[in-house]
Picture (cartoon, rainbow, N blue to C red):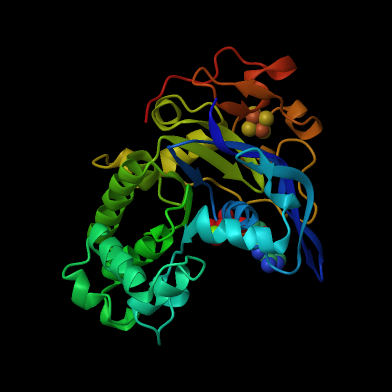
Length: 334
Ligand code: ATP
Ligand code: SF4
Ligand code: MG
């Protein structure tokens, strides 16, 4: 399979006064070229830590204890700081959740966008021309005038458009977005989703988007990775996962999603219990404490990786090995 990015066996700890927080444990994930991958999971499952690991921008108390992040077959974890910065500037860029905190309030967009191109040996006029062009591309009206404005002069949706424009200035191969629509209302959110989709197609970029919002994942993404408490529990093509989720956690998430139960009178199910502590995470199945299908083996042995028909994987004893249950998964009733 043609992957632009391959994360293999990645483990990341955060040092804390209470001990090491094992935020990512042995995760593997392929990102197909020219596709949009969504990473979904509850708060604290490690979604942002995956993105920051790819960017080489983990917090100072983080330690990568194992694994590789192969970008075009080169391990990003082996790059020097300088090489990493260059990659980040040119090949990989990021759209943040809240443009108000990621954009510089005292600099106009023209200036911020010019600064992004500081490595390019082109004139200031040419950089400005590119800034205007990209502002037009992301749907900012009258870009020639508005490029000279400051972030506070833009509405929330326009700011996020500009944020996407800034991320695209260098023509990156890989665009990362961490909850890009969380700060927006539903209408703006839909517009930003369509914009990302159009741009991805036009620019043939590869995109990884992190979101809590399954509706966004369903609409925007080609592939999805479901994370739970620092592990990837299921991956696959979006449509296949939505119609045939195999991991009990993915199924529980889909049942929780308002978009899936719209128009129905039943109350939204909630997944009882909490995400386990990451200082001393469960040794076997990470979802065992909350799983309705839990068996004795689930507390004892790490679940095997079962391959899904669409090429993805799911990690659950029900699917393979001594815990295999041929009646699982049940037909979809959601
Ligand atoms: P959310 O949906 O809330 O953004 P997330 O899935 O992005 O959550 P992460 O931010 O990746 O989750 O965090 C994963 C785990 O690592 C959490 O338990 C979090 O508290 C912990 N963590 C993240 N950054 C740090 C840090 N700098 N120091 C200590 N712990 C951290
Ligand atoms: Fe549930 Fe066991 Fe599967 Fe874990 S391995 S998700 S506890 S059935
Ligand atoms: Mg996050």
